[in-house]
Length: 215
Image (cartoon, rainbow, N blue to C red; front, side, top):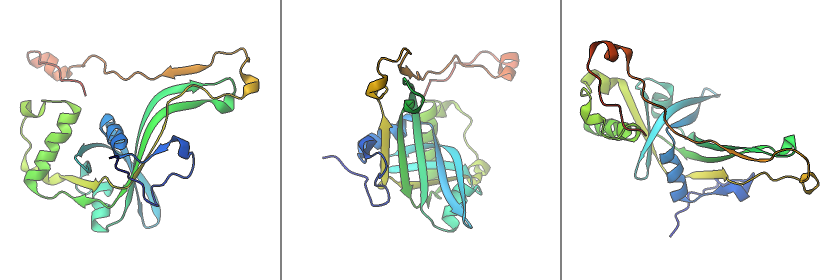
């Protein structure tokens, strides 16, 4: 049975034909992305902070310095934050300027953050995050120390209020423009990592190391 993330707040009002509240679809987009933007308010001012994220089960996690606004603020004064994750999939080039668009996948989440304060749980979440970025790398690294654990804040929200929007189609031109003599179509954005660039210090002073696995 499909689980919905629709609430009165997350219900999409503009462009509902491109919207979904399907939880599995939202999780796929969250897992496919490395960065999100956390929106919050402080003294009536809106702030949006980009950061990296990861997921475990029904929880969405992010981290920052323990005193950073997007970690400390909603814990000191509990408030609902708004988080957006977006993936650009292609440029949609139409026959008229106003019908140009993009193909994309996007999730908007809402929730009140809770602090992950237990030391062992924080370290376990650090590993989960690094495993997302570079699987298997954690075991090869110098272990994290007490000051690093203390200085890094980890928060999470439960994934239970969210909306998905997406576009995955060719140009939609006016019927009168179909014969206009210009190329129209989609230019896909292909995601791939380039060749690893070794740290110059390592190149000069140490034997070559095995490059990391790609995300």
